[in-house]
Amino acid sequence: MIKAQLAAIRSSLPATTVLIAVSKTHPIERIMEAYEAGQRDFGENKVQELVEKYEALPKDIRWHMIGHLQSNKVKYIAPFAHLIHGVDSFNLLKEINKQGQKNGRQISCLLQFHIAQEDTKFGLSLEEAEAFLAGPEFYLLSHVRICGVMGMATFTENTTQIRQEFQNLHAIYQQLQSSYFSSNSEFKEISMGMSDDYPIAMEEGSTLIRVGSKIFGKR
Ligand SMILES: *Cc1c(COP(=O)(O)O)cnc(C)c1O
Image 1 (cartoon, helix red, strand yellow):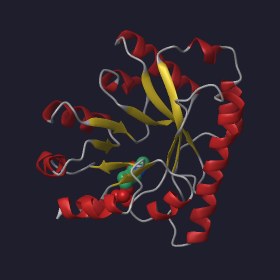
Image 2 (cartoon, rainbow, N blue to C red):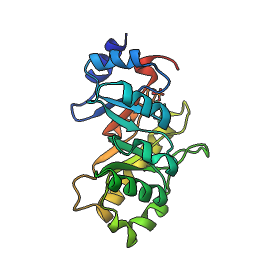
Image 3 (spheres, protein in one colour):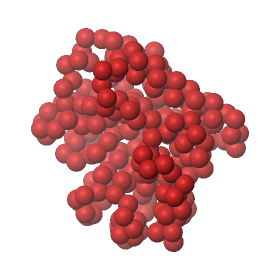
């Protein structure tokens, strides 16, 4: 089941797109099924669950922290997180940098933008991001690597709206790329698209899709 779902999704993706299997709430055995089918990128949205799964599972898994992250919990995932998707404040970025330094590594991050018409979703506005990207402090952060942007569309059946929101995120990416990262080839990722909307996200330029229920079934 998991293996067949993974194969079906992968066959619809260009080779350059990374499929992140969102394993939140699912037990180790089900994650191992995906691992044995060749899956290596997994996403979790809670720090404690992420740490427990990291400890229990093979060490060549690339763990993506996709949920809201509180500054006081960065230290638990700083030793191993492959990519932190939900950076939604400069304070959080500074804390990730501090923990990166402590662990002797540069931690890869995405800036999360609020693109949905819902207050429940986290994220920066373009203005907020530009305020710190243009500031003097940003250049001192040598233990974070900003690899791109992340966003979540509104939970709606309206595909026109979803597409519009993904287009907005793509435009934000392009704006930041040309203004702040034009000499930085690592700024190349757009994390957008989940089980119900990833085909639209792909059409709008997503490079990382985060798919849970379509692989593992209902939570
Ligand atoms: C849960 C979650 C997903 C996956 O959602 P599905 O609808 O199960 O594919 C993707 N991104 C984030 C941030 C999530 O929290």
